[in-house]
Length: 397
Image (tube, rainbow, N blue to C red; front, top):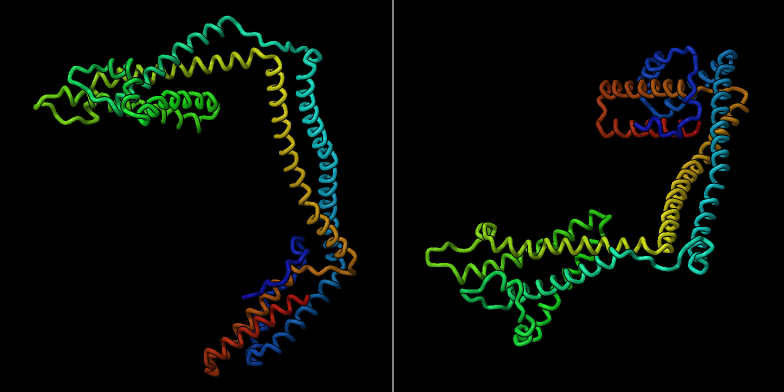
């Protein structure tokens, strides 16, 4: 039942040492309930009587009153110390936020200033590329040309070419007439085969962008590999179909995986494709590192990111501490109000008395119902009235 609907008392965390026998309240309340047929008016009178009796006992006990007040003084001092710690923390950390903002502004200003006045920061404005970069660029162009020819040929062989019994896997991978044949087949065929190399090069470019993000890199890598598997499987299937005999089994994935042609296509395409990606990534990094301004800018941007993370963490800490202040200030005010009183009532002990009294009253109602044979609805109505009386009494304290 609603015995504790009253707002939690500020005294309950104080451990009083009053020696009061609360067990007698149950028996007295039960006897009074039976004598008055459990009526809520008499319950209210009994609650008032027990409250007044308890208050007088604790008020007259000077020794325990002094102990109670001392306990509240100790708690108040702890709260004051906590509040002082929070205020000190806020005073120390708030300037750190300002310092982070100033450093971020300084970094942004240096980035802008270094572009206009590189000599001020000992930055060589020229891009200094090593001979290895130019050699790598030449290799990349050759590999790019190879991949364009490879994917144009394999795309045409996969989707549009009719294979003859003497068609080889090399012819399927490197068809020098693939573009002219696609032209003859129509604009759609030409568009498809010309777009395929750039789709794969775009996937390679995405791998370079996502190299530091495995969650994006791995799916991109898998998509590119699946594309190559589809091309290899389809070409190998066409070659198998035109060269099979009546005794040859139907083509399936198991046959494709055991086929030399299938793996030739995979290695000629996907492995070279990975080599292209590695060269491209190396050259991009070389170019990035060759420009001193770009290096300077990246270092400042990294510092800005670190400062933003620091500022965010400081902000969270400040908000967390600041949110504690109102409750601590409220508790200090409550302690001051308590200490200003002439005497202190240990509400924890009184709640036990109240509970014993109320439970005893309910027990008496049960006996009355059995003795007088009341109907169930009358009993329930009386219990509800008594519960409401108990709750209202506690709220009024």
